[in-house]
Amino acid sequence: METSRPIPKEEGIDNSLSVLREGYLYVTNRAIGFHSDIFETRLLGERAICMRGEEAAKLLYDGEKFQRHGAAPKRVLKSLFGENGVQTLDGEDHRHRKAMFMSIMNRDGLLAMREITRKQWKLAVERFEELEQIVIYDEAKELLCRAACEWAGIPISGEEVKEKTGWLGTMMESAAAIGIKHRRGRMARSKAERWLEGLVLDVREGRIQPADGTALSVFSKHRDLAGNMLDPKIAAVELLNILRPIVAVAVYVCFTALAVIQHPEERAKLMSSEEDKLQHFIQEVRRFYPFFPFVPARAIRDFTWKGYEFNEGVLTLLDLYGTNHDPKQWDQPELFKPDRFKDWNGSPFSFIPQGGGDHDSGHRCAGEWITLEIMKESADVLANWIRYEVPAQDLSFRFHDMPSLPHSRIIIRNVKRLK
Ligand code: HEM
Ligand code: MYR
Image 1 (cartoon, rainbow, N blue to C red):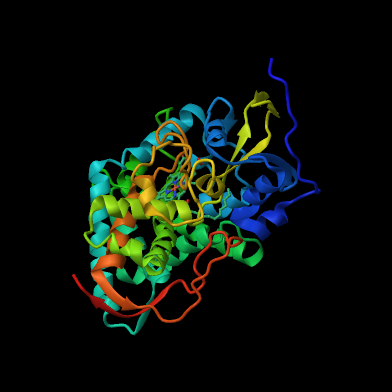
Image 2 (tube, rainbow, N blue to C red):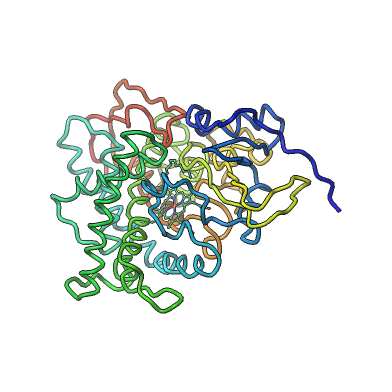
């Protein structure tokens, strides 16, 4: 019989405001204060357990102990995720829906994404040469919107790109917002869902024929475990679970640019465009910079873990940023050192910028591999394809902005093509 030990407790009727105030550092700050990788608090009007580190990640990804249904706050479903999408499913329903996503993440799909990204950067760089200055974040969102639609088999005209980029970007940028910014996120989602529902019906009624194997084709024809096609609204939510996060990779492109600018000695290692070097660099970008803050889940039943009692239904947050910076796993986590990935042990639970565990059976990010493809191509462009000036600007970013970005969104001038 395990003896129980108390979970350190943060005082206060509700500490949601502290999460907004401290952002990515909320859990780390308390873990340091309590000398504990687990503590309890109150968030959004209920008791919540927060935890970080490899062991905690293993626990949260145990599908016998935690479920996702009812875990993400309603407001996050209304803006970022969408309702009744794969993020909210459990058990067999989740595995079946997840298989639909993973079926397009095969070798051909990944290669296609790499090539589309390369082509879109080429077109963009030609344009950059004509412009006095460009803002990397804005350009990356737009070129990734084009890339996402092409990859997913979604028809989009040149004139539509700005509008659609706006919707997809707003959903992600307003994920943790309150007030008017949150309402903008909801509105962007409604418009985008209507657009994609229309396309799903177009496919089903034979008006358009996206290529086999593309997300639009696969999701429009997918059947659930009962043999029924997805409700068009849910198919639209899932198509947005492809388009929105591909546009969101612009945040990582922006941080990649920041790392290229601020670490010339690391940039120099990319000069050969070797795949390994690009991989280590972008893995360190994903580890080092903040993006997705925490993953929420609920305990399915009462259980005890390391002596700590979890009650059925308790809201539990796994801190992704804190786990990627856990000094128990990472030597000098506060330093940007891509070479640490030369001999990284590959644990699915200690390096979790896009969630942990297994892609097929758990909730780990379905788009992790294509994120790597997009980032490697983008790192190569920013380090090797172009020469540019970086004018004086505010490159700092704040840990309480979720998502966080360099304030200037990274301005470059006098872009000249080298390749
Ligand atoms: C899930 C992060 C890009 C599709 C997730 C999760 C995180 C995450 C933290 C949740 C893991 C969990 O619940 O345990 C990110 C970040 C990205 C990114 C930081 C960088 C921009 C992508 C891309 C795609 C994608 C490019 C698709 C093309 C998904 C889907 C899920 C997911 C479908 C739900 C998986 C499930 O519930 O089983 N992502 N992601 N993500 N991501 Fe990503
Ligand atoms: C995606 O679009 O699914 C991937 C990237 C989104 C990152 C957004 C980060 C902001 C904060 C979200 C709070 C979520 C808490 C459950």
